[in-house]
Image (cartoon, rainbow, N blue to C red; front, side):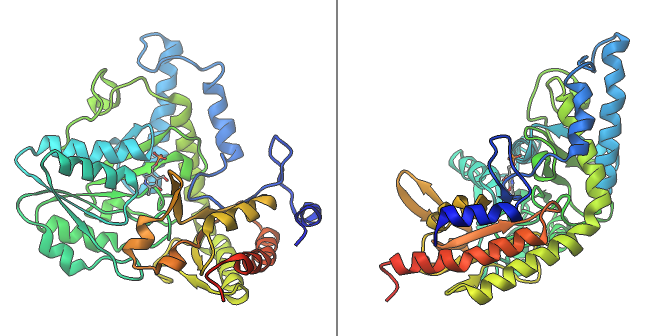
Length: 405
Ligand code: PLP
Protein backbone atom coordinates (compact mmCIF):
# COMPACT_ATOMS: atom_id res chain seq x y z
CA UNK A 1 0.00 0.00 0.00
CA UNK A 2 1.32 3.45 -0.87
CA UNK A 3 -0.63 5.96 1.25
CA UNK A 4 0.56 9.00 -0.73
CA UNK A 5 -0.41 7.59 -4.11
CA UNK A 6 -3.70 6.27 -2.68
CA UNK A 7 -4.48 9.63 -1.15
CA UNK A 8 -4.05 11.29 -4.55
CA UNK A 9 -6.22 8.65 -6.20
CA UNK A 10 -8.82 9.32 -3.59
CA UNK A 11 -9.08 13.00 -4.50
CA UNK A 12 -11.08 12.21 -7.59
CA UNK A 13 -13.58 10.31 -5.46
CA UNK A 14 -13.79 12.81 -2.65
CA UNK A 15 -15.81 15.94 -2.82
CA UNK A 16 -15.59 17.15 0.73
CA UNK A 17 -12.73 19.26 1.95
CA UNK A 18 -12.77 20.88 5.35
CA UNK A 19 -11.44 24.40 5.95
CA UNK A 20 -7.90 23.03 6.32
CA UNK A 21 -8.15 21.71 2.80
CA UNK A 22 -8.20 18.14 4.11
CA UNK A 23 -10.34 15.56 2.38
CA UNK A 24 -12.83 13.91 4.67
CA UNK A 25 -15.04 10.86 4.35
CA UNK A 26 -17.08 11.22 7.51
CA UNK A 27 -18.45 7.97 8.91
CA UNK A 28 -18.43 8.88 12.60
CA UNK A 29 -21.93 10.32 12.91
CA UNK A 30 -22.66 8.63 16.26
CA UNK A 31 -19.84 10.77 17.69
CA UNK A 32 -21.17 13.98 16.20
CA UNK A 33 -22.74 15.21 12.98
CA UNK A 34 -22.20 17.97 10.45
CA UNK A 35 -24.39 21.01 11.10
CA UNK A 36 -26.93 21.05 8.26
CA UNK A 37 -26.74 24.16 6.05
CA UNK A 38 -30.41 24.90 6.75
CA UNK A 39 -29.71 24.71 10.50
CA UNK A 40 -26.72 27.05 10.24
CA UNK A 41 -28.81 29.55 8.24
CA UNK A 42 -31.67 29.39 10.75
CA UNK A 43 -29.45 30.08 13.76
CA UNK A 44 -27.31 32.80 12.16
CA UNK A 45 -29.62 35.78 12.91
CA UNK A 46 -29.53 34.84 16.61
CA UNK A 47 -25.73 35.03 16.60
CA UNK A 48 -25.82 38.44 14.95
CA UNK A 49 -28.68 40.94 15.06
CA UNK A 50 -31.25 39.09 17.19
CA UNK A 51 -29.17 38.86 20.36
CA UNK A 52 -31.83 39.93 22.87
CA UNK A 53 -32.60 38.05 26.07
CA UNK A 54 -35.99 36.34 25.73
CA UNK A 55 -36.80 37.21 29.38
CA UNK A 56 -36.39 40.99 28.78
CA UNK A 57 -39.41 43.29 29.00
CA UNK A 58 -38.53 45.22 25.82
CA UNK A 59 -39.72 44.17 22.39
CA UNK A 60 -36.15 43.63 21.15
CA UNK A 61 -35.60 40.79 23.62
CA UNK A 62 -39.20 39.61 23.76
CA UNK A 63 -39.38 38.98 20.00
CA UNK A 64 -36.93 36.10 20.47
CA UNK A 65 -39.41 34.20 22.64
CA UNK A 66 -41.62 33.23 19.69
CA UNK A 67 -38.67 31.53 18.00
CA UNK A 68 -38.05 29.44 21.10
CA UNK A 69 -41.73 28.47 21.10
CA UNK A 70 -41.53 27.47 17.43
CA UNK A 71 -38.48 25.27 18.12
CA UNK A 72 -40.22 23.58 21.01
CA UNK A 73 -43.16 22.86 18.72
CA UNK A 74 -41.06 21.37 15.93
CA UNK A 75 -39.23 19.13 18.40
CA UNK A 76 -42.56 18.05 19.91
CA UNK A 77 -43.81 17.20 16.41
CA UNK A 78 -40.72 15.03 15.81
CA UNK A 79 -41.20 13.18 19.12
CA UNK A 80 -44.99 12.97 19.04
CA UNK A 81 -45.57 14.81 22.32
CA UNK A 82 -46.88 18.14 23.58
CA UNK A 83 -44.52 21.13 23.36
CA UNK A 84 -45.05 21.85 27.08
CA UNK A 85 -43.35 18.51 27.80
CA UNK A 86 -39.97 19.65 26.40
CA UNK A 87 -37.27 21.56 28.24
CA UNK A 88 -34.07 22.68 26.57
CA UNK A 89 -30.76 21.67 28.14
CA UNK A 90 -27.08 21.86 27.20
CA UNK A 91 -27.04 18.36 25.67
CA UNK A 92 -27.42 14.65 26.27
CA UNK A 93 -25.25 14.49 29.38
CA UNK A 94 -27.19 17.23 31.14
CA UNK A 95 -30.54 15.71 30.14
CA UNK A 96 -29.48 12.32 31.54
CA UNK A 97 -28.24 13.87 34.77
CA UNK A 98 -31.34 16.06 35.10
CA UNK A 99 -33.67 13.10 34.58
CA UNK A 100 -32.01 10.72 37.03
CA UNK A 101 -31.02 13.17 39.75
CA UNK A 102 -34.32 15.07 39.37
CA UNK A 103 -36.43 11.95 39.96
CA UNK A 104 -34.30 10.80 42.91
CA UNK A 105 -34.67 14.24 44.50
CA UNK A 106 -38.45 14.16 44.03
CA UNK A 107 -38.78 10.61 45.44
CA UNK A 108 -36.39 10.62 48.43
CA UNK A 109 -38.01 7.57 50.06
CA UNK A 110 -37.04 5.31 47.11
CA UNK A 111 -33.45 4.10 47.06
CA UNK A 112 -33.04 1.80 44.07
CA UNK A 113 -31.88 2.58 40.50
CA UNK A 114 -31.90 0.11 37.61
CA UNK A 115 -29.87 0.53 34.44
CA UNK A 116 -27.83 -1.60 32.00
CA UNK A 117 -24.16 -2.38 31.66
CA UNK A 118 -24.04 -0.90 28.16
CA UNK A 119 -25.22 2.66 28.88
CA UNK A 120 -23.25 5.72 27.86
CA UNK A 121 -21.11 7.09 30.74
CA UNK A 122 -23.58 10.01 31.02
CA UNK A 123 -25.88 7.45 32.68
CA UNK A 124 -23.55 4.68 33.86
CA UNK A 125 -20.90 6.81 35.57
CA UNK A 126 -23.65 8.88 37.22
CA UNK A 127 -25.46 5.78 38.52
CA UNK A 128 -22.21 4.35 39.90
CA UNK A 129 -21.52 7.64 41.65
CA UNK A 130 -25.01 7.55 43.15
CA UNK A 131 -24.34 4.00 44.31
CA UNK A 132 -21.28 5.31 46.16
CA UNK A 133 -23.57 7.73 48.02
CA UNK A 134 -25.80 4.89 49.26
CA UNK A 135 -28.30 4.05 46.48
CA UNK A 136 -28.80 0.42 45.46
CA UNK A 137 -27.80 0.01 41.83
CA UNK A 138 -28.76 -2.85 39.54
CA UNK A 139 -26.87 -3.04 36.23
CA UNK A 140 -28.64 -5.46 33.90
CA UNK A 141 -26.33 -7.53 31.72
CA UNK A 142 -26.81 -8.17 27.99
CA UNK A 143 -26.55 -11.26 25.79
CA UNK A 144 -24.20 -11.71 22.83
CA UNK A 145 -26.48 -9.58 20.62
CA UNK A 146 -26.48 -6.78 23.17
CA UNK A 147 -30.07 -7.35 24.35
CA UNK A 148 -31.31 -7.39 27.95
CA UNK A 149 -33.55 -10.09 29.44
CA UNK A 150 -37.02 -8.58 29.98
CA UNK A 151 -37.93 -11.17 32.65
CA UNK A 152 -34.84 -10.22 34.60
CA UNK A 153 -35.87 -6.56 34.37
CA UNK A 154 -39.42 -7.36 35.54
CA UNK A 155 -37.98 -9.31 38.49
CA UNK A 156 -35.79 -6.40 39.57
CA UNK A 157 -38.32 -3.52 39.56
CA UNK A 158 -39.83 -3.33 43.06
CA UNK A 159 -41.43 -0.84 45.46
CA UNK A 160 -38.06 0.63 46.38
CA UNK A 161 -37.21 1.42 42.72
CA UNK A 162 -37.25 5.15 41.99
CA UNK A 163 -36.08 5.10 38.37
CA UNK A 164 -35.16 2.71 35.59
CA UNK A 165 -32.86 4.25 32.96
CA UNK A 166 -32.33 2.22 29.77
CA UNK A 167 -30.99 3.63 26.53
CA UNK A 168 -33.11 3.59 23.36
CA UNK A 169 -30.23 2.66 21.08
CA UNK A 170 -26.62 1.90 21.84
CA UNK A 171 -24.04 4.38 20.59
CA UNK A 172 -21.37 1.75 19.81
CA UNK A 173 -23.38 -1.03 18.18
CA UNK A 174 -26.61 0.75 17.23
CA UNK A 175 -28.58 -2.04 18.99
CA UNK A 176 -32.14 -0.87 19.71
CA UNK A 177 -33.80 -2.02 22.92
CA UNK A 178 -37.56 -2.84 22.88
CA UNK A 179 -38.24 0.42 24.70
CA UNK A 180 -42.03 0.42 24.53
CA UNK A 181 -42.16 -3.05 26.12
CA UNK A 182 -39.56 -2.02 28.71
CA UNK A 183 -41.52 1.14 29.57
CA UNK A 184 -44.69 -0.91 29.97
CA UNK A 185 -42.99 -3.32 32.40
CA UNK A 186 -41.51 -0.48 34.45
CA UNK A 187 -44.78 1.48 34.60
CA UNK A 188 -46.79 -1.59 35.59
CA UNK A 189 -44.55 -1.81 38.66
CA UNK A 190 -44.92 1.87 39.56
CA UNK A 191 -41.38 3.15 38.87
CA UNK A 192 -40.37 6.10 36.69
CA UNK A 193 -38.88 5.22 33.29
CA UNK A 194 -36.15 7.27 31.60
CA UNK A 195 -34.55 6.52 28.25
CA UNK A 196 -31.38 8.02 26.83
CA UNK A 197 -32.50 8.42 23.21
CA UNK A 198 -29.51 10.50 22.14
CA UNK A 199 -28.68 8.04 19.33
CA UNK A 200 -32.26 7.26 18.35
CA UNK A 201 -33.82 10.69 17.81
CA UNK A 202 -33.77 11.63 14.13
CA UNK A 203 -32.75 8.11 13.05
CA UNK A 204 -35.90 6.15 13.89
CA UNK A 205 -39.49 7.39 14.29
CA UNK A 206 -40.72 7.89 17.87
CA UNK A 207 -44.23 8.59 19.16
CA UNK A 208 -44.14 9.45 22.81
CA UNK A 209 -47.87 10.11 23.11
CA UNK A 210 -48.46 6.37 22.65
CA UNK A 211 -45.69 5.19 24.98
CA UNK A 212 -45.14 4.78 28.73
CA UNK A 213 -41.83 6.66 28.61
CA UNK A 214 -41.74 9.29 31.37
CA UNK A 215 -38.45 10.98 30.50
CA UNK A 216 -36.36 11.02 27.30
CA UNK A 217 -32.98 12.64 26.63
CA UNK A 218 -31.78 13.91 23.28
CA UNK A 219 -28.77 15.84 22.01
CA UNK A 220 -28.64 18.34 19.15
CA UNK A 221 -25.21 17.49 17.82
CA UNK A 222 -26.28 13.94 16.94
CA UNK A 223 -28.92 15.23 14.53
CA UNK A 224 -27.14 17.90 12.51
CA UNK A 225 -27.43 20.81 14.92
CA UNK A 226 -24.49 22.27 16.89
CA UNK A 227 -22.95 20.97 20.11
CA UNK A 228 -24.09 22.31 23.48
CA UNK A 229 -27.84 22.06 22.99
CA UNK A 230 -30.19 19.24 23.90
CA UNK A 231 -33.58 18.57 25.38
CA UNK A 232 -35.35 16.53 28.00
CA UNK A 233 -38.89 15.29 27.44
CA UNK A 234 -40.85 15.16 30.70
CA UNK A 235 -44.25 13.48 30.44
CA UNK A 236 -46.98 15.58 32.07
CA UNK A 237 -47.43 14.57 35.70
CA UNK A 238 -43.93 13.09 36.18
CA UNK A 239 -42.53 13.83 39.64
CA UNK A 240 -39.14 15.48 39.10
CA UNK A 241 -37.17 18.27 40.81
CA UNK A 242 -35.16 20.84 38.83
CA UNK A 243 -31.53 19.88 38.31
CA UNK A 244 -30.20 23.39 37.69
CA UNK A 245 -31.62 26.03 40.03
CA UNK A 246 -31.59 29.80 39.49
CA UNK A 247 -33.88 31.94 37.32
CA UNK A 248 -37.39 31.12 36.14
CA UNK A 249 -36.55 29.95 32.62
CA UNK A 250 -38.22 26.87 31.15
CA UNK A 251 -41.11 27.31 33.61
CA UNK A 252 -38.76 26.87 36.58
CA UNK A 253 -37.67 23.48 35.32
CA UNK A 254 -34.21 24.47 34.01
CA UNK A 255 -32.64 27.74 35.09
CA UNK A 256 -30.20 29.76 32.98
CA UNK A 257 -30.55 32.23 30.12
CA UNK A 258 -31.61 30.25 27.10
CA UNK A 259 -29.07 29.23 24.45
CA UNK A 260 -31.23 30.91 21.81
CA UNK A 261 -29.09 30.14 18.70
CA UNK A 262 -28.80 26.53 19.86
CA UNK A 263 -32.52 26.20 20.54
CA UNK A 264 -33.40 27.65 17.14
CA UNK A 265 -30.88 25.29 15.54
CA UNK A 266 -32.29 22.27 17.34
CA UNK A 267 -35.82 23.23 16.29
CA UNK A 268 -34.71 23.45 12.66
CA UNK A 269 -32.79 20.16 12.93
CA UNK A 270 -35.92 18.54 14.38
CA UNK A 271 -38.00 19.88 11.50
CA UNK A 272 -35.46 18.54 8.95
CA UNK A 273 -35.24 15.18 10.74
CA UNK A 274 -39.03 14.80 10.61
CA UNK A 275 -38.89 15.45 6.86
CA UNK A 276 -35.84 13.29 6.16
CA UNK A 277 -36.45 10.37 8.54
CA UNK A 278 -37.64 8.21 5.63
CA UNK A 279 -34.14 8.49 4.14
CA UNK A 280 -32.63 6.82 7.21
CA UNK A 281 -34.37 3.57 6.42
CA UNK A 282 -33.84 3.79 2.68
CA UNK A 283 -30.73 5.67 1.59
CA UNK A 284 -28.67 5.49 4.80
CA UNK A 285 -29.56 1.87 5.58
CA UNK A 286 -28.77 0.83 2.02
CA UNK A 287 -25.33 2.45 2.20
CA UNK A 288 -24.66 0.92 5.63
CA UNK A 289 -25.72 -2.52 4.41
CA UNK A 290 -23.54 -2.25 1.32
CA UNK A 291 -20.49 -1.26 3.37
CA UNK A 292 -21.15 -3.95 5.98
CA UNK A 293 -21.64 -6.73 3.43
CA UNK A 294 -18.45 -5.75 1.59
CA UNK A 295 -16.33 -5.64 4.75
CA UNK A 296 -17.64 -8.94 6.09
CA UNK A 297 -16.94 -10.56 2.74
CA UNK A 298 -13.56 -9.13 1.87
CA UNK A 299 -11.77 -8.57 5.19
CA UNK A 300 -10.10 -11.52 6.88
CA UNK A 301 -11.38 -12.26 10.41
CA UNK A 302 -14.31 -9.80 10.22
CA UNK A 303 -17.41 -10.38 12.38
CA UNK A 304 -20.43 -8.22 13.12
CA UNK A 305 -21.06 -7.07 16.69
CA UNK A 306 -24.60 -6.64 18.00
CA UNK A 307 -28.13 -7.45 16.93
CA UNK A 308 -28.25 -7.55 13.12
CA UNK A 309 -32.00 -6.91 13.01
CA UNK A 310 -32.86 -4.54 15.88
CA UNK A 311 -30.35 -1.88 15.01
CA UNK A 312 -30.10 1.77 14.00
CA UNK A 313 -30.08 2.02 10.20
CA UNK A 314 -26.84 4.03 10.12
CA UNK A 315 -24.53 1.99 12.35
CA UNK A 316 -22.32 -1.04 11.82
CA UNK A 317 -19.81 -2.31 14.36
CA UNK A 318 -17.35 -4.87 13.04
CA UNK A 319 -14.48 -6.67 14.76
CA UNK A 320 -11.33 -7.45 12.81
CA UNK A 321 -9.75 -10.24 14.77
CA UNK A 322 -6.17 -10.10 16.07
CA UNK A 323 -5.56 -6.46 15.14
CA UNK A 324 -5.89 -3.22 17.07
CA UNK A 325 -8.82 -0.90 16.38
CA UNK A 326 -6.57 2.12 16.98
CA UNK A 327 -4.15 0.96 14.27
CA UNK A 328 -7.03 0.57 11.80
CA UNK A 329 -8.24 4.07 12.65
CA UNK A 330 -4.79 5.54 12.07
CA UNK A 331 -4.54 3.96 8.63
CA UNK A 332 -8.10 4.98 7.76
CA UNK A 333 -7.18 8.48 8.87
CA UNK A 334 -4.39 8.59 6.27
CA UNK A 335 -7.13 8.37 3.66
CA UNK A 336 -9.25 11.01 5.40
CA UNK A 337 -11.72 8.36 6.56
CA UNK A 338 -13.26 9.06 9.97
CA UNK A 339 -14.62 6.16 12.04
CA UNK A 340 -14.41 5.06 15.69
CA UNK A 341 -12.95 2.15 17.60
CA UNK A 342 -14.49 0.12 20.38
CA UNK A 343 -11.56 0.53 22.68
CA UNK A 344 -10.48 3.57 24.62
CA UNK A 345 -6.86 4.41 25.13
CA UNK A 346 -6.67 5.15 28.84
CA UNK A 347 -3.34 6.02 30.39
CA UNK A 348 -1.41 4.03 27.86
CA UNK A 349 -3.32 0.75 28.29
CA UNK A 350 -5.88 -0.26 25.69
CA UNK A 351 -9.10 -1.33 27.36
CA UNK A 352 -11.79 -2.87 25.19
CA UNK A 353 -15.07 -0.96 25.49
CA UNK A 354 -17.48 -1.78 28.31
CA UNK A 355 -20.14 -2.52 25.67
CA UNK A 356 -18.00 -5.17 23.92
CA UNK A 357 -17.08 -6.68 27.29
CA UNK A 358 -20.73 -6.77 28.42
CA UNK A 359 -21.66 -8.59 25.18
CA UNK A 360 -18.94 -11.16 25.83
CA UNK A 361 -17.05 -10.35 22.61
CA UNK A 362 -13.73 -12.26 22.83
CA UNK A 363 -10.76 -10.12 23.84
CA UNK A 364 -8.97 -10.59 20.50
CA UNK A 365 -12.04 -9.36 18.60
CA UNK A 366 -13.12 -6.63 21.04
CA UNK A 367 -9.74 -4.91 20.58
CA UNK A 368 -10.20 -4.75 16.83
CA UNK A 369 -13.75 -3.42 16.75
CA UNK A 370 -14.55 -0.48 14.49
CA UNK A 371 -17.78 1.51 14.30
CA UNK A 372 -18.81 3.10 11.02
CA UNK A 373 -21.80 5.41 11.54
CA UNK A 374 -23.25 7.00 8.42
CA UNK A 375 -25.63 9.88 7.72
CA UNK A 376 -27.79 11.15 4.89
CA UNK A 377 -24.76 13.12 3.67
CA UNK A 378 -22.73 10.01 2.79
CA UNK A 379 -22.58 8.78 -0.79
CA UNK A 380 -22.20 5.45 -2.53
CA UNK A 381 -18.80 6.54 -3.87
CA UNK A 382 -17.60 7.04 -0.32
CA UNK A 383 -18.86 3.60 0.70
CA UNK A 384 -17.07 2.03 -2.29
CA UNK A 385 -13.90 3.88 -1.43
CA UNK A 386 -13.89 2.72 2.20
CA UNK A 387 -14.84 -0.82 1.20
CA UNK A 388 -11.93 -0.79 -1.26
CA UNK A 389 -9.35 0.37 1.29
CA UNK A 390 -10.27 -1.78 4.28
CA UNK A 391 -9.02 -5.18 3.01
CA UNK A 392 -5.55 -3.70 2.35
CA UNK A 393 -5.49 -2.11 5.81
CA UNK A 394 -6.60 -5.30 7.54
CA UNK A 395 -4.15 -7.49 5.63
CA UNK A 396 -1.26 -5.16 6.33
CA UNK A 397 -2.01 -5.06 10.07
CA UNK A 398 -2.54 -8.81 10.27
CA UNK A 399 0.91 -9.30 8.72
CA UNK A 400 2.34 -7.28 11.62
CA UNK A 401 0.21 -8.94 14.31
CA UNK A 402 2.05 -11.27 16.70
CA UNK A 403 -1.24 -13.17 17.18
CA UNK A 404 -1.62 -14.25 13.54
CA UNK A 405 0.37 -17.34 12.62
N1 PLP B 1 -25.89 9.34 25.53
C1 PLP B 1 -25.47 8.71 24.42
C2 PLP B 1 -26.09 7.39 24.05
C3 PLP B 1 -24.49 9.28 23.62
O1 PLP B 1 -24.08 8.64 22.52
C4 PLP B 1 -23.93 10.53 23.99
C5 PLP B 1 -22.84 11.12 23.20
O2 PLP B 1 -22.09 10.44 22.54
C6 PLP B 1 -24.41 11.15 25.15
C7 PLP B 1 -25.39 10.53 25.89
C8 PLP B 1 -23.88 12.48 25.60
O3 PLP B 1 -24.45 13.52 24.83
P1 PLP B 1 -23.76 14.97 24.79
O4 PLP B 1 -22.49 14.82 24.03
O5 PLP B 1 -24.76 15.83 24.10
O6 PLP B 1 -23.55 15.38 26.21
